Amino acid sequence: MEGNGKLAVVIMAAGKGTRLKSQRPKVLHEIGGKPLLAHVIAAASQLAAPEDIYVVVGHQTEKVRAAVASSGVRFVDQLEQLGTGHAIQCAREAIKGYENILVLSGDVPLIRAETIEQLWQFHQAQQAAMSILTAAPSDPTGYGRIVRKTSLWPDMIPPEVEAIVEQKALTAKQEHLREINTGIYAFETAPLLEQLGKLTADNANHELILTDVAGLMFSAGKHVVDKQAPDAEEVLCANTIAELVALDATLRLATANRLMAQGVTIFRPETCTIDAGVEVAADTVIEPFVQLLGLTKIGSGCLIRSYSVIQDCTLGSDVLIRQSSVLTESTIADGARIGPFAHLRPGSEIGEGAHVGNFVETKKAKLGKGAKANHLTYLGDAEVGERTNIGAGVITCNYDGVHKHATRIGKDAFVGSDSTLVAPVTVGDGAYIGAGSCITKDVPGDSLAVARAQQIVKENWAAIRRARRQKE
Ligand code: UD1
Ligand code: CA
Image 1 (cartoon, helix red, strand yellow):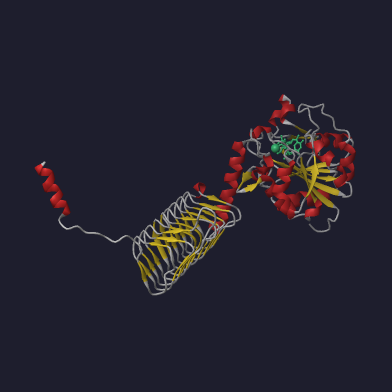
Image 2 (cartoon, protein in one colour):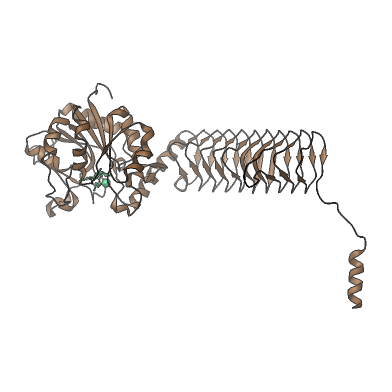
């Protein structure tokens, strides 16, 4: 943010989240594949440097710190959670050097930096002591409500905010109030510090609540104003699992809409689970019930068929992922075909135009251009050269119970069905392996290796046996 060397952001994230009925701290519950707190930090980071962002932590503080440590933000401890006002009291030392602070809630994750910026601009223009971001959702139940000073000219001058009244404290007369407090504020630091000291738990919440600061400021003759968020959806909070799931759906639908605007076809987007960091190029088609997770990147012209789950993978263009394939931390080059029911585990690199068919599992396996492993195969710690064909049921025996070993198969080779390759082992370019072989020694290029029991044929054996039985 420009010209704000004296602005800090405080994110309240110390609460337990009792209403979630969960062991996990509330701000570490995830939507769109990321903890609530990480979303709020991401928005804050667009407005302030990480060293000016203070996260108030308390409940399971080590876990919360570890989850967002990479963002570089600072932390403030609130060892006992005595309310949102107390959370800011705990940050007193941290904020006293700043002229103004922004306060965000760790459980309001859809907030956009633009909206916070608007509040900040408004706060400055108004020269306010406290500016509250408000909203008018269709159902205000559970939120604190904005009470205004009665104005003689309500249409002309937005009447000053007199107080924020929590749900529990609403009088019958106040229940009609639809304007809610979003838990996001801008404060001038000096008057805030002054009023924080006056908070008591003498209220319906029996806590030291930040919302009481509005009334205290008003009584002290300070300027308390509000700015309505352009969209009530972005300031909804997650107090219950149902609310959390609803926010997740909103966020994922927004991601799907962004991708569709970029030319991606997503059939039945409400059934797809797509994380916010996923990138997909135009002309790719995503069928219903697909999951695209983490930092997955998909090129153009691909078809991702139903029930496939793709996590942290990079796919080239014109890739076909057939139904129910599970791909993790792998790369798939242009024109490759995967599945149905394929399992690509971390470190799989599938070359251009290669085929990985049904019930094939790969792990740290590199398949060259045009290589094929079409049926019922395990390739672990393996390299398969260009155009090599891996028959049905082939297994690389990569694990001796203690160590993993590599299998190297050259290009233009043919590994017959049901062969086992006991690693470490190398098969040269152009070599053939007879079906059913158990290969324990290297196979030179262009040779044929057969390693199976010799077939014995006893002519007429069955007829003689039947004749003997009939006599008995
Ligand atoms: C709060 C507001 C309410 C507003 C709503 C918007 C208060 C008293 N009420 O209610 O007016 O409409 O947010 O979402 O502030 N926290 C701490 N330390 C504490 C208590 C809470 O850090 O001691 C953190 C929580 O982790 C959470 C945030 O503050 O991230 C808000 O607390 P929460 O208990 O969820 O407040 P609400 O009841 O939602
Ligand atoms: Ca809340």
